Image 1 (cartoon, rainbow, N blue to C red):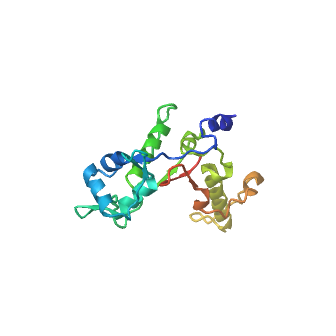
Image 2: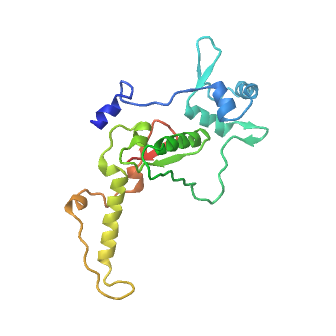
Length: 213
């Protein structure tokens, strides 16, 4: 029933798509470039994306892929428009959590991911909410339970159990470790050999992937 209700918020094709952005939004809000300068650079380099031109020719609309292409290739005063990425550093990780329901956790996470994507970053969202509101907002309507955060936890439980059962004695006491058993409902899912990338799904946003809940 929940899946049926959620599908009603999608387009007739049961698919969410990301809208285009106007040339004013691209220059002033996303790339932080003066609009006249932006238009001048586009006119000077015909190989840059043209966007979709309105019939009256007064406005252009760009997809996020086109915006990122412009971001990679255009420089303003010799300054790259790509976001800063510290060398030899791990990806930035942020957790949005609250013990109370209905506090806006999914909404904050959604807008945080959107903002990072518009700034030019690749984003991976991990949805731990059993209601999967964030996954739905990102354009996913139906996902097999095996390929969610729960599936990752089950996979890791299988691997850790096998590792502990393979140890002949305990590391500290030297006593024999009792064999641990997992129910067939977990063992028979066939998750043991899956990789992290197998659980990642593309979203309606080209720069955002998600591990659904």
